[in-house]
Image (cartoon, rainbow, N blue to C red):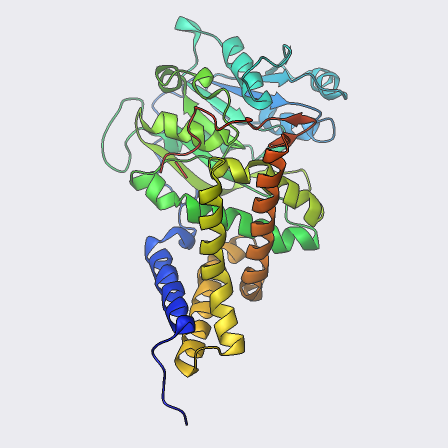
Length: 403
């Protein structure tokens, strides 16, 4: 048997990959313990007023289901819903008005203003319609038009937000509470790629660090934000051009006080993503914006993902660098799959999907590169016919170091 080798490029790359995964394991991002059904609750003495704001553009296929779930909330306090029809080219507004629900009002959105992304312009108008001054509700519930909510979702959001008065400790009042909606996971491509989407999000923005640490973030499909805190942060206008609006909002509100982000089964996406092409387009819409349109960050991201996801299986399967490198690669590959298992369990997927992570990561790298290419062509952030990304790096921050 040849002597064990502890030198060479393959060995050192394997050691770096193992160290990287060890750090990620210690971070705790992967445990999926930050969930709405495990969060501390504080039932308010009197339930505050909440206004839901729903921006909608060309959502005729899902809007009736989404709005019906909002109208059916069993929330004990005052609650109403404002849908902002963002210049839809289909029957979104007509369907919403046709529901005839007492809680729902429909606002026809103004043409997109310069310097704003479409969604944030619609949200801004909805918040203005929700009231100001003495008529301002305690909380604004910002939710997407393709999300369906369980009847107790709003009650759970407000209970996680905490007591009427600011306190300290685990039950300190949260200025923002956000649920990461359960994403559609029916097709083969969705089963392969969607759980990884949430897992990579958690890797960048560890929920436990957001809830009990310095980081900030949010998930845009379901956000309860304190109206006073949002106003103090400058309102939606302070982030008008942000492409990654949820994490930008989380960063703004974190400066006002504690925030909370967790997984949930109560809110779920009802729009199928379809095949790999549609999922890739969703990823590419904001991937380069996440890197602040910086080619050096893009290069570093690609090299970092190659180190973490390509080196371990490469060493394990091809044995470059000797037996030590091979076993180190195999152990790191197993650790990678093990850290992915809680997310697969949350999405009720087989743990064997963990061994497909290198291929899934390669797909995400491709989407990120495509995102950069689209931006340089002036088509960054393409969504429903609008190229929303800036042609130069935006002034508003997109994260607060996934914050």
